[in-house]
Image (tube, rainbow, N blue to C red; front, side, top):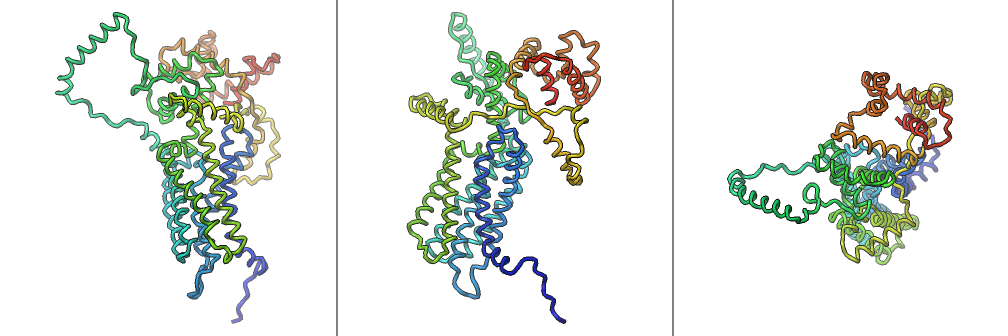
Length: 526
């Protein structure tokens, strides 16, 4: 039978060009995505515009895929042919494999895009084993005993460190492991014989302590928990104290003790509304770093040692490649790409180091050191970062969506979008969403919160209020109580949202700080 020639969609010249440039293009794309992520990923904390989130989401999902595919192409490349010596260009391309491991490790500013990514840490662990195996296979296959081959070893170690850091951080931020890390070591309790033996001496010491206080001795400094003194130096210290001892436990659904509740109330109560919201903003920033970045690793002694190791390996590899590798046998374009990968890796490390030094974590660590050197560094960093970085930790805006407007809006704009992906509803929701600044709402919200804490002894009961506190205080519980007590929570939100929207049309007060304007903004946020 006559063999049929396969139909070629692309000309032979195009296919040849793609086969020649495929790996080079994918490696450069992987580096570009890493630079894009490390620069822009932190901005989603304080940018409310959807385009930045779409950009980060696309880069985050594409980065791992591009690096993985590049490793696959590299492992499938024909470095040798029919017993001939290795192609020098393949040896240089095999040197790129450790850099792809670095890219799979991801930048310090983002390890997870959403909380669900942390729960997939086992998948990343499997990916770590597989991709390190592929990189090691490429390394063995390109082994030629040359200086370039030995230069791959330190970069391979640096790549494994970066990828291992990411896997560890994802595991630490997963729900179960995060909760378990906050639980204390189980205490079997004191030995009964020792307890009874020391009871009498303890009783005598307690009596002496009481007697001393009666004669005017000062009580010991107020502490909370395991001897932790409440900080008083600045707001960021207070924010870190609340985050470490209380906010993390609340996030993990753990119960706070009465002492912890009183300490939290004592810190916040005597602040202004602006300062209280600033402290809450800092707390949320610490939590964001723990859940979505490599903060738990890089702000530790082990993390600093690992970061120093990977950075020194990268710098020494660049110096060795520049001064000791003979480059006449390699193509110029491959040499240029290698330099780009080396300088790109150094840029990522330097940028991450700069962000680490200028971060809230470094400020907290320095402020805890009571010496003149730490004080000088503290002042230098705080003044320096106010010039080159943004102090914004969130957008200071909240989303607005009006139910009545959504029913009246034009539904034909996104009719052409395929409905099987529900993309029309997604685009419709974000297209008509607006944003309002929250600066005018801080003082009324904070003052009402203080008023409620003054009237309610048990702070835990505040969480049970759904609006009944206000209407009871206004004396309308008998007429409006049904809209809160007798219906479900989501039903109650809809009732009050419609009522608030209708009442806002009769309010002609131009003052944006009026209670009606604030109520409307909160209603459209809910």
